[in-house]
Amino acid sequence: MEIVRSVANLQQYTCEFREKGCKIGFVPTMGFLHEGHQRLMQQARAENDIVIASIFVNPLQFGANEDYETYPRNENQDVSVSKSEKVDILFIPTVAEMYPEEPSITMQVTKRTEALCGKSRPGHFDGVVTVLSKLFHIVNPHNVYFGKKDAQQVAVVDALVKDLNFPVTIVPVDTVRENDGLAKSSRNVNLTKEEREEAKFLYKALRVGHQSIIDGEKNPITIVKEVKAFIKQHTRGKIDYVELLDYPELTSIDEISGQVILAVAVFFDKVRLIDNMIIQLDNNSGMEL
Ligand code: PAF
Image (cartoon, rainbow, N blue to C red):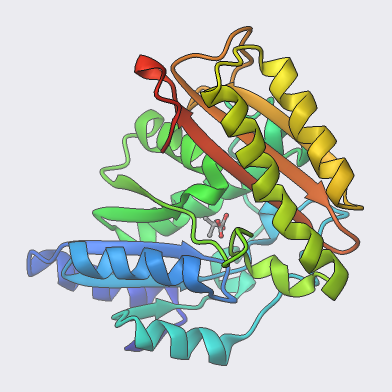
């Protein structure tokens, strides 16, 4: 595995891969890799000739009072995880390498950001699409792999690729969970022992809501109330949001039908956790996607 830190070097590599007709799979990450990232790398490995992963904690997608400084980082560990997943190139740029000058162009996401994390983290998705546009130009991948835990990110990136005609395929990959259901996340390491115990109830709350939908509840307000009550009963976390929306449009609905997302975000002391379930209701199956 090659570690590349400069944009120019990486572009040279990717040009050569393209000339040889290689299919390039790309896994963009912010590092502190866990099994969720490993699953993305494994799928990329299975579906492409070359796998490139990036590690870059993108300051543009963090708000002023968010956890940019305390976001966990461990380059040595990330290098060994990437090697073990047979990544060909690990791209680890500095902030100065990615943003050498004050940008003269800014990007603004105008759809699918009125709800969920877009609402609670103003400007977050503007930062995400900016860094991904740069990374797509640098890496020139065929396929790009994203975890479904960040379902709003997947919806926004799908729109980015369509709106700006990036010739890439977005591949959403299932959320990887701990044994008790907690979604794997780099931020889990910043939970206290007590918070970690309580954090498992986020997924359990989603399952409670899911079960009510399967049992025939059609009113999104009822489900949201039920999920909020469950989280309040089992955790001391502060609920940021519980929402049930259509997916991938992320607009509000009066009645549950078609494809919907049930999503939660909860603040613990130093960590804000998110999780979601995408549910398909055609033929009333209520299947989790
Ligand atoms: O999901 C993430 O880790 C980040 O939002 C991403 C896609 C790497 C962009 O910085």
